[in-house]
Length: 103
Ligand code: FES
Image (cartoon, rainbow, N blue to C red; front, side):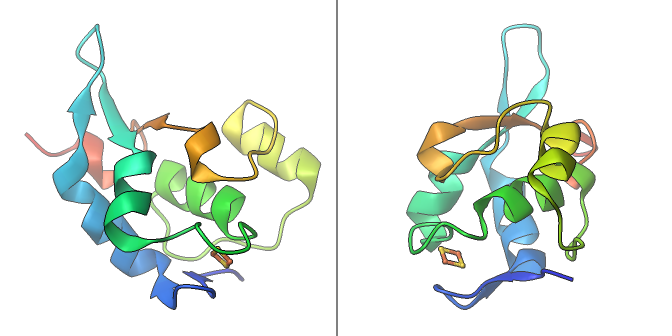
């Protein structure tokens, strides 16, 4: 299982909590997680970048731990090519995250 950004020593549990205050609304009112803001605030994903696709899936699924995945697994979960850094994915729909449940 993968549960942290090793380079920055940040757990996904911490990053899920930290992202709660960063929710923005899209044009149709959908809730979005601004990943660039999360990276700016915490430094997550700004080292080797290996944690980035895992963090994206963790946020999308609202799970602090995700299994080791293949490229195909990532693309299935994310619906897009695997990003190498958070700057490549500035916003992530938060439908499945706790962020979407907040008022
Ligand atoms: S493990 Fe997160 S940037 Fe390296």
